[in-house]
Length: 477
Image (cartoon, rainbow, N blue to C red; front, side, top):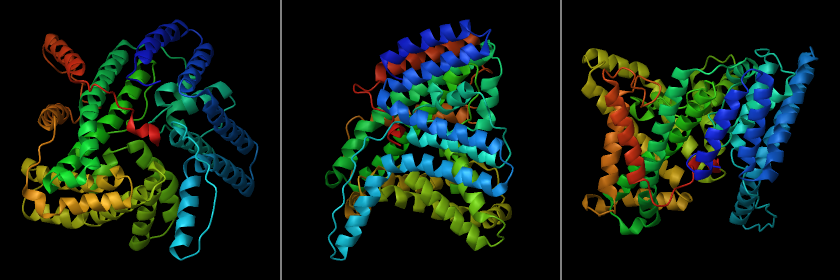
């Protein structure tokens, strides 16, 4: 079930009404929400619900075993077994075919033909997200930063609460479990803000992302038919398609959470206003970035004080984050690209600050725009790897950008209208860049102006929604 489907438009009001009628008993409310969450996920495929249950049981039992165990080696053994089982399921469904195929191709390259069977399994929606949900809990219990729970309903609800079930954000048990335990009372102001955030997410997804999608598909699918400058434009459209698609989902997830009395972790903080590559990754897909930093980067770094080793660990961390996005060499190279440029960005911070101080550039708007434009250009170039079907496709696209046709204009259907919509969208985000989402407009003097703006967004969603609604991009991850 998708947030932008008619099914969900009927599902959500019914859930909302029953949920708050049950608010006198938090356990009954949690049981209802758990049942609803399993129904929501099972709407896509009931048979893959068994994988969610398996991951939930493994990590729940691991927490209980560690609670009874004081020996460090025994606790570590429990953690390792839990990680192997959880990541093993993810590996079988997401990476088995990729590694087997790559292994066979590597031997074939050296003239040693091999045969190996692939599984051709359908990737369960959200598996990367709920696997990381559960592991964050188990790791925090192992580190003694979180008390393991005996409440099986609360834990299973944490793993698969329906707003986060398909594409996150990747929640932390330390943030969400305490909210699940306690009785929730209806907060009108929180619900209003949640409704606004849902509306803003719908606008991002249905007006911006879905209108960028056919243009991106056309340009990436016909490289030879477009000039180099048009290929650059294609990467820009894809950047906004990806951002508005995923952050639109996150806005809707956070907004639905607020309707239910929850405060989920923020996942985006206006990443296209970042002034450096390291700043970009503090703003973009925040829950994933923080997960990899906390559970991969910092453990790898350990107590080392060598800058070169820190840099290597950062590159390895982003390599793994690239692989997390998809089982393809394009994602591995994309992760390597991110790692290299974030290391360059971090190592140049002091030099940049000295330069800004010398020429009195700090906090100057024009200089910040230059940094934003440069960062955005680097992000867009890397996204060629993210969008390309394979490495050959990516190479052809990059070669086309730097071809002699760069200064030739190629017409792209609907590109001007879509650019106008993107411009309006970016203006709204710019003026609200210090707020949690683009539609937090409480400070408007006259309430009627807010309602005019809400109505304008609804009309835009109806008027400019793409004819063929696109599936959320991050469902494939």
